[in-house]
Amino acid sequence: MSTTSDRLAAPPGAVSDNLPMRAFVTCGLASLAGLMFGLDIGVIAGALGFIGKAFNADTRTQEWIVSIMMAGAAAGAAGAGTLSYRLGRRWSLLIGGVLFVAGALICAFAGSIAMLMVGRVVLGLAIGIVAFTGPLYISEVAPAHWRGAMVSLYQLMVTIGILLAFVSDSLLTPSGNWRLMLGIIAVPGLVFLGAVLFLPESPRWFLLRGRDDQARTVLRTLRDDPAEVDREIAGVREQLKVRQLGAAMFRGNPNFRRSVYLGIGLQVVQQLTGINVIMYYAPKIFGLAGFGAGASNWATAVVGLVNVLATLLAVGFADRWGRKPMLNACFATMAIGMAAVGILLGLGVHGDFSRYLLVAMVLVFIVGFAAAPGPLIWTLCSEIQPLQGRDFGIAVSTFTNWAANWLVGNTFLSLLAGLGQANTFWLFAALNAGFILFVVFLVPETKGVSLESIEHKLMEGLPLRRIGR
Ligand code: BGC
Image (tube, rainbow, N blue to C red; front, top):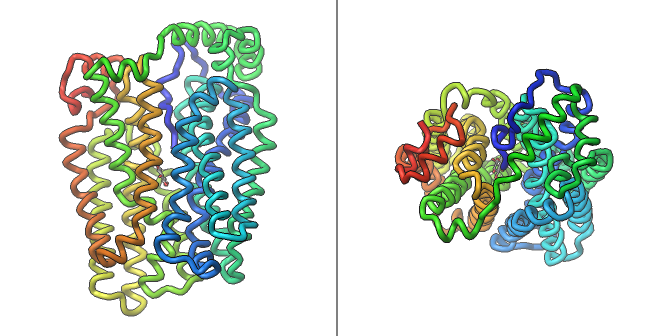
């Protein structure tokens, strides 16, 4: 999901309500980065059972096959800032695309578990880079008025990618061909690579590197009005005067440390909701309820579809209802969904009615996630950081997202075995309920508040929950 809020990079004075065709096509092509992200997350779910059988992999090994990708993504995200600064956004996306195709092919032809893990790490590196650079690029090339919509398009593409991977896994389930499941995503990877070849470099990056003429040339192709080009260049130049203090500011400024810790907390919370337990292991969970491999993978595809639809519905609500009420309502919904799954597994799922009820309860959880914590945690993470520490703060929270994602993916099957099925879901239910306290006591309401005001209150030392409204 996005790491850059639409309001962050909005240069003052860039005003035009039209979305020029070329800017739209450029953002549309770049949003394929989101599709890559989603494919990567979704593809393992349907393949895991077959991989487990093919390599005789125990629970612990399966957890590693799933989660080693997130370790790669954490490393990719950690390096993505430097890469996209030094080589440019376009080259970073190209490198990400090449790694993506390579990773998919290594997985497809892996002759051993070790090789499969190498492929998953390469895929992870790819996605760490692409998921950082994609939204950054989009926010830099989209006209100011359209920035929010274009970044949302990217987020929607993530969920569509997950859905496509789930559907493709389902279609391939009767053949049991896990190699094809993992390899086929190389095809959209190649399409992405082709698309990136047509993308111009980001004008903002050109300005960052002092290449003003090239910035102007590109921007002229992306904007209808030449006066807008001049205004935008002037605005970006102003912004670039703000020096990023990063780690030094973290060491020296206790107030900044608080916003960095809040970013870390928000991302840990997002992952401990258990969302990726569903994304990676849904077919296994449906298997526990007695569904066969085919039905489990199709039920998982429904999960993917509901994830897309709920994300679509959610776009816009957060700016009307506010972050905190949305988060609280959704954490409560998710706690109910997880608790109900726990109860059903505890009672034992007998018969079709309870089986379908279990799927319905997983869907309740997904709707809750997609409607708020999914998109909003990313938005909040970019809103709470002060200007001079923004790059550092967002990089740290993005890294945390992957690290926490790794932790959940790496322990879920062991939790099922150690704690028991029902208790595992009860644990996630309790965590989701507990996150309401986190929101009440620590999360600020940032709806409609300027970033300057948030920064001012943070630096004045106000409690975190009061740095918004
Ligand atoms: C999370 C991912 C998750 C995705 C599901 C994102 O907001 O960061 O970990 O897989 O939502 O749609």
